[in-house]
Image: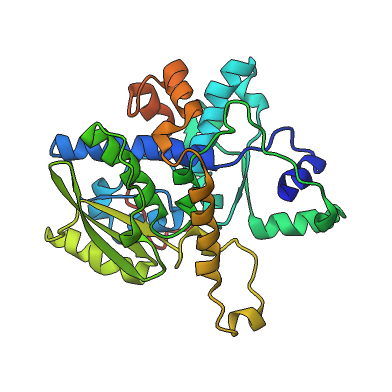
Length: 334
């Protein structure tokens, strides 16, 4: 709440929670996975919301790029919706909307510059600042953060989010959020057992075999490239046993992103596991929310009913999906 208040004092007209866009990502990614399973598409499918990981695979393993989900990351999806759906609803020129993402991730600064993230000459996201930079900006503005009264995120159009959107920030969170929706869609049921403990935690590699209806789904969750590399080698060799893989560039997931505030050395050396503590907060918020599945988010449902049509529709692909290509590890500056 204090962060929202500070951003409003600094001049932002609207402040939205990216969790809404995380729910939107799950809709697109979950249905993409279902399509690949049903239509004998390329498997395993690998998540694509960590731009550090995407940079790595484009330079180090370009031969497996077709395994990546084509979904943009949540903040890029938000920008795309702000400059299409939101602009249309508010009768605004997309060129007059300036989107700033506050992210725990440094790699998202480069992500917003990708040519695939420009639609009709307009960037999905105009600027990215890290959470650490936001802290510095609050000090620069002379704002007494501790004394601020809490304010709410704006609720029009993009205000609602589910517990599934919240847990995106923890390693295994994207996988668990996706499974909650995939399981309901594949079984045509409202499954009550939605906590996939097998993919939680800060272990380097987590694996699980799940039975969803008549389908046995084998999943893996990897954090950091050193842990992910053996999985990628399996895919190259055609021996991967998995259907769905989550890969995050940062150990612990986005809660430990490169743009987060620095951890005091005394805290770091005390044995206190800040990554687990940050993830615990997300899972607790998930448990406290009345809606814990992305497809149950009413504003997400309205977005599809009023604008996108259906997950993975032609318009959804145009605005919310992207492409990847082989890139040189050390491009020629000349």
